[in-house]
Length: 110
Length: 114
Image (cartoon, rainbow over all chains, first blue to last red; front, side, top):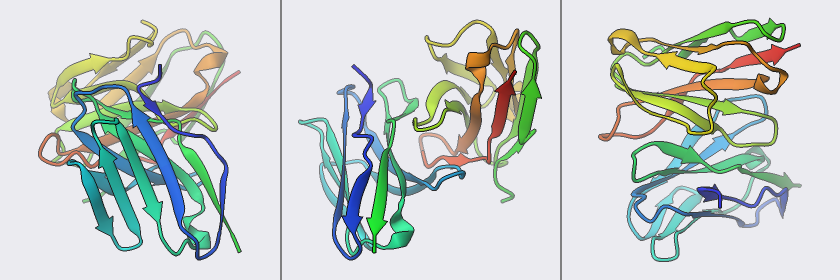
């Protein structure tokens, strides 16, 4: 079992719609959860972090965390073509290292 | 804040040769990570440092790989006796550590082993 699992996609969403990205993790001791965005040929950049159960909103982005289900999600509202990228879920393990999932490729179609 | 710097940007080498990469983190960051990324995959954890101490090295990592962070500043990653399977983008990232775990990535070193 992978430590952090994501559906690789591609996920195709029409412009203006909501994109929903999901992630599960295996280490119940994990405390910190992140979403990074990676454009093709570029390095990852942090877009959201979440530490407690529930929702956290930042502009068009909402991160959701459910520690009981070991599940993290990212919602992108009013999707724009510039949101087309690979979205990486990352988790701080109980050993305090940061582990990434394989990423979900998101494509926003006009 | 000049960002995380990695050198070289590209490295082409022949199988069996040794290569060394350098990473200069953001100056006040005490945590430094090395990841490897291949096309279509997420960054794969290799190792990380808290100041000069290497806290963990991936169990999947061959003993041909070694990393150092002398004096808790820059870090080097060495791969001995390179193999074609080592071809990948090697990413370095730094953070302030437990007070702020946000990772800042360098542009990476693209390794091609012929």
